[in-house]
Amino acid sequence: MEKIVDVKNVSMHYHTLERETPALRNLSFCVYKGEMVAIVGPSGCGKSTILSIISGLLKPSSGEVKVNEKAVNGSNKKIGYMFQKDHLFEWRNILNNVLIGLEIQNKLNEKTQATTQKLLDMYGLGDFKDHYPSQLSGGMRQRVALIRTLAIEPELLLLDEPFSALDYQTRLAVSDDIGRILKKEKKTAIMVTHDISEAISMADRIIVLTNRPATVKSIHTIKLTLKHERTPLTSREAPEFRHYFNTIWKELDVHVQ
Amino acid sequence: MSNKINCKNTNHEFSKEHLDFLCAHQKKKKAILITQISLIVVFFLLWEIAARLELIDTFLTSYPSQMWNLFLKLLKDGSLMKHIGISTFETVIGFLLGTILGTIVAILLWWSDFISKVLDPYMVVLNALPKTALAPIIILWAGAGITGIIVTALSVSIVVTILEVYGAFREVDQDKIKMLETFGATKLQVLRKVIIPASIPTIVNALKINVGLSWVGVIVGEFLVSQAGIGYLIVYGGQVFKLDLVMMSVIILAILAALMYQGVAYFEKKLMKWR
Image (spheres, chains in turn cyan, orange):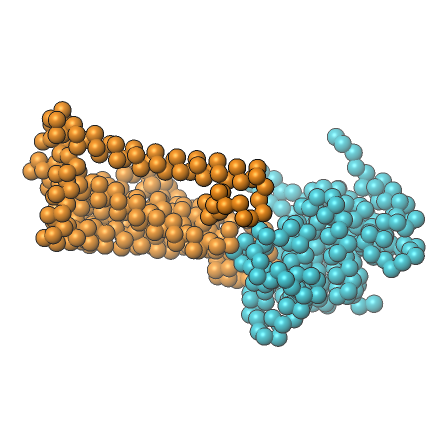
């Protein structure tokens, strides 16, 4: 299988005047084309740092990251990034919010604009093109944020706790929604989350990290027995779901101090 | 918006309870407006009556009908419009320059963290300093005329603008900037696509403050230069004990400042339709 992301022996230290904080230590993993990998780990273990490094926003202290066989150097226009908050611009309408990535990359033309319009139509936002973000619900806003990311036709998607700002019901619905869209668009994605159920319901593989400085503790390939097609919601009905949950829960070794 | 719906009109689909609510709301709004107008009318009436009955010394206080006659006289000979025109021109130019230059300096500070750190203590001192103290120096340097007055008005408003706008730039959500950077945005793109548009509400607020500050600068400048303008009328009237001239000028000044403030408020409404 074709490797899209190859992370080799990456370490990262943060420097402040008070101290030096090791965030990642000798981290190695890879992601194959078309798969959805979830990264779970204790809070504050440096999960988001990994995404920043892959996207080229941060330079690791040591180690090597390759995306599509090429070493990462600066931000990569083929990587789409999705955040916890939607970060829609309140002063732009939905269409112009979705086009911002193309605008930044100077790729705004009739063809890309038409493709983006089609994405909006396909995912039920066609009627909201001229609306402003404040007129949309939280779930819809997050869907707009996903389409904004998809508009630049990324080869790789990085999702940084994309649902954790939503309330529980919306969260289930939106993760199902976005999981389906990603499968349909056949995107390779890495999702960082602290929600074990969310990871199992969406991912093909789960990478469990240790406490800070984070390193790979274990990798689980998720195989679920399902009567119907797998979606994030139906995954939760699989008999193996509970088993994966318990295993990962034990590995994370969470306790209240 | 509710004042557009006539609460007496029962043609639309609102319930009786809702109509009562709308009626009460309209009644309250009307009462406030009537009281506001009555207050000013009563004030001027009492002033006029007190003057006619010689309860107050009109040499020191003047009175409304005297001011009104003077207003008509100056309006007729054209001198009033000239003074109003000059002051308004100076204020508008000082205000625009203060806003534009202040914003440019704020962009510079945002662009270079080093420059902003270096200039920080100077900005603090300049902000604390009453700028009107600089007016005599500015007028000596920039000339005792319209230019000197405009520069005085500018000096009063620019420091506040710089600090307000730079503050707004720094408050823009870092993740919004990061979002653009993931698309490969350059610093100029970050500035144009997120920093400036996100700060527009604050910049407009700075404009509102600047209207008042620019008038302060212009009036102080005109006091010193004493050639023309509303400030000149006030200072001249004070020196020759023509209190009707002083009082009338102050009232005109109040009206002009309010009109300019409303102008900015209108501009704000146009600009931020997305709210």
